[in-house]
Length: 163
Image (cartoon, rainbow, N blue to C red):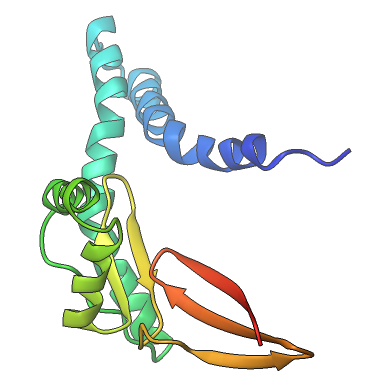
């Protein structure tokens, strides 16, 4: 029986999550043994616990630089980024769910920036890829059924219409 994807995903994320605290602990341990420094226990706990938020913010602000550098080394360009921070974008998405059609926010972004946009989520960046046009993309004749394929921002809808 194959392993479900949930535990596999969590196992892959564990080093990223525990790595900063473990690195801080090991650094303090090496400093204590090799440099004969005395670090109080409360400092060990605070520094180990604070390492994860510090790493989170450092990662948040350095990731765009490393992504741009990686794209440039491959001769690629990054998609345009939606303006705003994670909280303003999240607020805009929630207001879109409450007032408009749920994907209306993405429609506005893609009309302004093109069919591919990147936006900042709370913990990761997300990429929205939409077709360049919202109209009917194709009509296929299969026996006596005309299959009309329309692509809307959040999913693909296939409608079978009698001929």
